[in-house]
Amino acid sequence: MRSLISALGGIIIAFLIFIALIASKAGLEMRTAPLPDLEDLSPISVRLTVSGFTEPHGIGSTALLTINITSSIDASKTFVQVRQSKAFEIWASQGISLVVTNPTWSVDLLANTPVIVQALINATEVGYGRVTVETIWHDAAADRDLYSMDTLGVVVLETEISVFHDIGGALPLAFPPGYDPSSVPEPANISDITIPWPPS
Image (cartoon, rainbow, N blue to C red):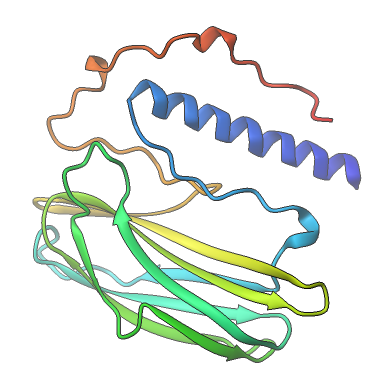
């Protein structure tokens, strides 16, 4: 079992390095969540879903964002935060505005009893926005904070909208209209990067 976990960890690290290399070539800023130790996994899970955007798709469309928070154990005083930002710096705008009653709150979670909160996503202009919901719960028995999160990316074009889930803490690359990635110079010393295999 340990060798399987080590192998999976190595594959995830190799994937994140690959994504970082692609982003550095395109001059993009990577924002990734740290990989947790397996013993530090939170009992809380967060899942974001988006209903279909209103027709016609593009600027002016709206959709319902559903935040589903569940815990496998009772978790009192769980802190929840909803954030939005630009997904990548090469985009001029987030492209969206989020209408949520409370962007931060505390909730007492009961085991296997979902808490569902809804918000509205407005497509305001061409852009690539990131919506992240994070929970923090203090495990008093182990005296540590445990984190969980989910992230969505929303690309808004004039007549089109795409929604992405993060993969390993990173959103898929997408270029704004008219952007030429070949104009970005190659990073220096890319040949010096090695990926250890098998993972130790």
